[in-house]
Image 1 (spheres, helix red, strand yellow):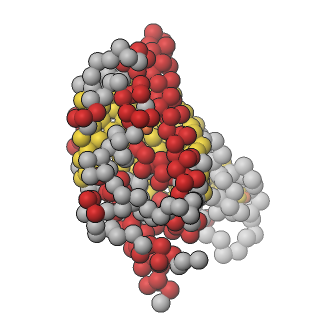
Image 2: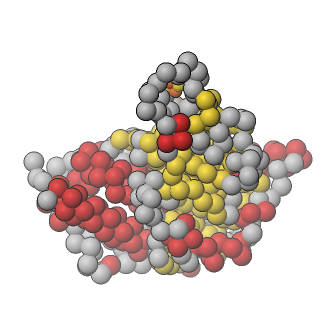
Image 3: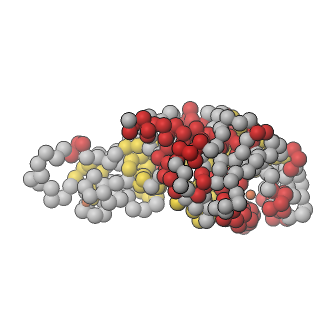
Length: 375
Ligand code: FES
Ligand SMILES: [Fe+2]
């Protein structure tokens, strides 16, 4: 079995696009890579955990899992949004057990310890006589929290750069689109038998697969004019829209002059049409499974618009179904002895190239950091 170092070294992250290959197959199928990603990618990047409107009022909270770590983000009585490991300091039970909600106090269901919305430990039943126990030092362990546009983010790394710095040019790209005026409508969740990177690669192929796999979507995009821009840690894929009668549901629900598809490293996608946005959050489950959560937003979520919005979600779900089968086929192919790595289309696949280089940089730095720590 090749060492982790050899697997990482088998990708050349300095090759220009015309000479580059994809990251090699073992990166998608070897659980040591998945473990390394949890430590060096997901534990160190800003991860979306919810929507701002879920934590608007004091006591409102959302829970999430990042790299296997249970997390809760909660708005304090002072209006400050904070996040914590959702792990009781007594015997490690999850303190907050609902996905989202509102509470005056964070109450552990196991032995009834209570924490304030600021994470401080307020009370422990039947704990008199315990020596050398400092209540002040036994609050929930904090993690960094931040917000941008409609979204709440958390970062497990105390040394992490700020959310704004990490997003870089994406902030000014998204600002003119007015997505904060859109309203959340509905979500869909898909469990897919593929490594999380297969889903990201599929998203970042610059529309390469669209005419072949998504006939309906293809009918409203001017495929030849599709553009791909890489900057910082994001890729913007964009296409002019064309009127189409070919597929009525797609034509009616995917409107505007341009389609814009943003990907922010490592696992967040934001797709915008006129009066429409959906986000895709790709969560690794294990080396060959991921969960993709779609959140759909519309300009108008009144009852009068419900049927239209539902039709729009159904169009998104159909595209997703088309992608799902191909992602699972790719995962099977990546395990085949016949496959090592593939080349990239210069016209289409610059986004994948960016993704693979950013990932390689994180994984290589992570391994070096661990080696230095072990010395
Ligand atoms: S584990 Fe939370 S009170 Fe015991
Ligand atoms: Fe697709």
